[in-house]
Image (cartoon, rainbow, N blue to C red):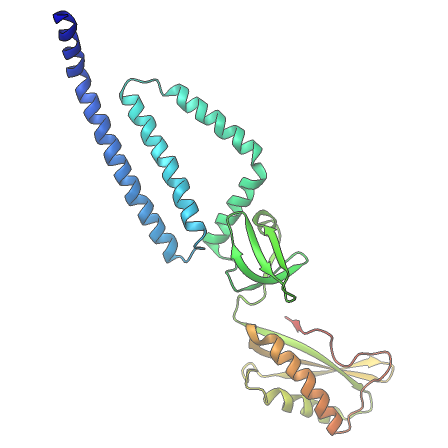
Length: 271
């Protein structure tokens, strides 16, 4: 028994430095990880990343770093870590192959959050989809259409195609076409349209509004009206111009087509 106790004490003395170093590594490693993740969260919040994404990324980074620390501590005790690394690598490969598409959407979501081709509140067009960005998630972007439909687009689809950020610049050039009878005086029609445009305070004076004349054929003339406004006010000013130009035409006796052609455009265009 005394010999057994002596051997145990010898082993304990030999093991004590390894245990102390492992505990120090574990304590310091976890402390550094907590500091690093707090710093990462602060940077992400400063960059105004989506609030739903920050905790997700924080948890992923924390788990990965703590797993690496635990593997290092196990190696200090003499435990063979090669098998752990092999198992983790195989598991990671299997999960990666199973979630290849999802991981692609995840990576695209990170790129969108970092480079910000659009942000929440912007109106964007991707392929045939157009709407206001309501939320940027890790795997998907949520859009709200003008008729209040929700569109869920995978981030991988967005980054794989051109993105048109309609409101990202803050201002828009709006185009509205007006069709009148060919014999109407060009200067008079242009003056009427410009008076209506300049009466709306939401429309910019610089760049100045323009009205271009073009013939349509069949005894008709087209006046292409272009003006600038804030992006979020494009619909209000477009429909204001449509309504009040029509009323001004009626007051001034300007003839407009009655059959076969619609008056003005059915939808505002932006360039």
